[in-house]
Length: 328
Image (cartoon, helix red, strand yellow):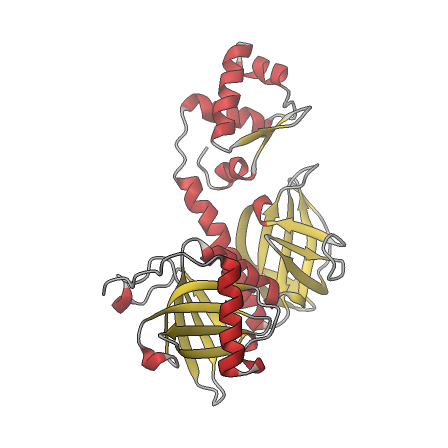
């Protein structure tokens, strides 16, 4: 099946949001969408309960409590909504086989209908909006939901004896936060850009093992930390796991595409293994002239693998991930 054409991008994002909200409220009543709206994006959509299950081009709206699919053709509008609390699973990147030519990077949702049957909806936002949509959705799922969290279970290479506890977990744009309140910056944060390893583990709590996520992440100062977390409700945990794994695997795919020379690997190993990360110390370790070292630093900075501060050279998240994924 051929892809549906995208509309001419004559309206700004703000104009699309205003006009779409207006039509939804006019045609569907104020219960059609819960404001403030987080995302409005053009999309290709197919859903069991929308437009007779036929592929449509329209808009997807993420409200505070729902996702709405909306079409407006020649003044005739049609819309369909399901609540965020009805979502039972999601699959970023899933493409139904019959529509392989219509989708390239879609999101599939399973949701619970009023009669307890399961419905399915798949949509692909226009351009790069899939990441923005998923991050906004994560923030709304994690609006202070209780999570079982052990932090940190590792500090550098040293294990700790910290016990897990149940505390609220929040999501802000591109970061998780716990141990504070809903105001950003009041607790401990894990930036998505700092995560260097993510895997599923079993977390022991009060006599039972629970499937959880182990998150290895960088600090601004100090060694990497490992945090283990599990949302208390199964449904919340599944949705959060799907989004975090998608975001992490997106970065892993980029890691696999990086090509390194033997000399670049040698430099990165020296930086990873040595506590001495000044130019002069690295020059001695690697037996390189200062001008050769300067050139190597420039190359690796351009590849996004290292960064310089006023006092030292450090691996970036991508640089650390080369080691966790055995690229070096």
